[in-house]
Image 1: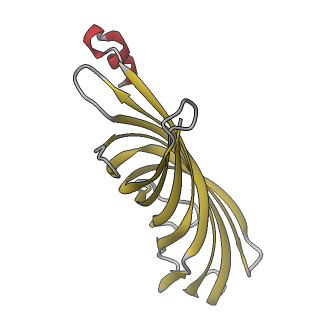
Image 2: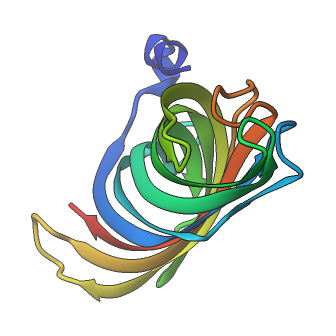
Length: 196
């Protein structure tokens, strides 16, 4: 998509707004596995950040291109886990990275936005039975949020400081080695957006 935009003469960008946004919140995991009657994973504290640019084109304003990363460590339990014939507790480290395209609806103070894209998750799993697994999976993510402007400097350098709320859904279309049917997630984070 970026190559097509760069090749088209009328698509030349007029303005770039660079943003950095550390964020923290909670992630909820939804796991399904045929080896267990059900899998329960506790909500996990997550943190990470986003680098993004808002670009004005001749044909559209406020297009958003972003890179983001999120980490969470979750504890859970597989009930009636057939490999051991009982319940099995585990700890899972979840690293998510994605490249997204979106649109920001710029307002005076409120700035809602939508974004989605492709990425990957690295999962490190360790359970009570002594099994340790690492798995990398392709993911799709879709979400949105809203930023609220706390402070405008009116100067070069840091021009604006926003506080925002973001919700994202992560879907892996492939079966994972760790959960053999699905392992999806929803994250809700607060972010501090610094616009340069």
